[in-house]
Image 1 (cartoon, rainbow, N blue to C red):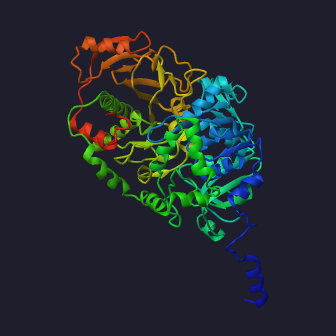
Image 2: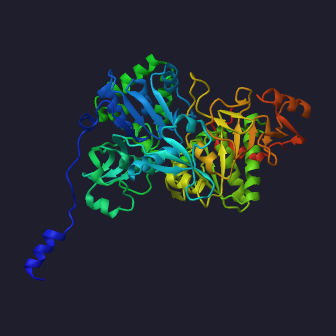
Image 3: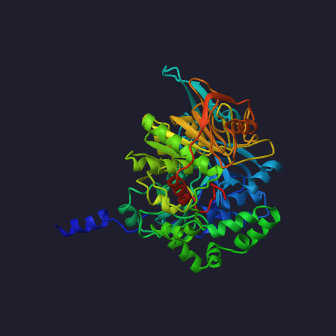
Length: 591
């Protein structure tokens, strides 16, 4: 080749290892430069290091942020305690470890009316961000129709007749455009081209794309543009939408980092030993102030925070994120697993629910089970293993994007690392709720729990009164709005089984079966109310009549009783031992 051509080829067409302006900066500078009081901030669920920096810089002030996130957990709750937030737009605000439950921080703020809560489902929340990113005024949805959220959010949700003449009604959600997005990613180059952390791919990417004034990225690893090219299938955030890139190892702590796609980035597990004392500290404002002083305010930078955690602890978290970790965990817990045939009401409930799920799946040829958290998830897990032993293929799915996982014994957390490692596909919220649960090829059975439930199957997981907040609808509403049918498992009491729920988080139309610690209630034929069809076999020496009486006494409505009501057979040893292996610490199945 002519020398002039060679020079032209080299100067014009040669790819550079690093391209674009260098946006790498410190976390403190990124927050100081791009975040201003009064902004609406989209904050990724795992952007914990950035949240801590927000608290450091704005502590003792009233910046009046609007906090937009699919879920508000971990350090995100501290933004609310610190008084930095005037409004939250989310689907769920809660504590998640050791078991999901209402947050004391949220309950105090809700009761004091110090912030405004705007409640959405997980999928409708994402759709609002998508609409903004796509430059649309709204997007259609099947979620939140028939719920209290539809009434609360009339300014951002409308129910219309299908303009194409199907005769069906369709919901539309208004676009939601944050001012700035703050997210944590696996890897980014200096310009901001980035690979999000699974399984929160959808909200991370769409949140960035929806934001009016760009994004701040914290990244586990800074990589070259050449690395980005080689992994372009994984890149979901284009650099031109990014304002700042901050190198932030362990930026998701105390959350974990799931990663099976980039060997250059080491994963790490959730820091349960950190979360437990934090949760204890949230019980009172003064103890939480003390905790925040120690772990956030007295750590001037994220590096100081990591130094305080200590090298040994951080390496242990990386060790816990290995594929076979569940086996070591189970070996430690196995000595406490009861081998007795004696069982408690929670175990009987889970096993009864699992049997019913199995029967429904075989009868209706369902192919997926979307699991909520708690006892309903345990029932779905148990049913899935029983089905596989029969040679029936069933896939467990989680709304965050996990598809086809096989829950490992020893940890009841839906998104724990060992479970995610078994996935056949890691997708996102859009794919799970939009297609697999609510789409044209939906062949899904939903497995949900309930804070409260009424005689029509309406579920309340949001608020009991104007002074008491629960957790929010999360993805439960999306399941109830789309799945073929729902099985609910819930501990029974008259306070939880009510005549009419005060707030509809999930409409009850598709809720066909309710399994409690006392009995099984079903909607028979076209009846929209539950009828008692079975009572659970519990160790108490009661007659059938006494069992039915107890069920009615612990039900807040006049319960219909089937003429063919009968007892549920006692658990088999295999059912009990499998269940206890799944929940060896008895976090859901009790003592």
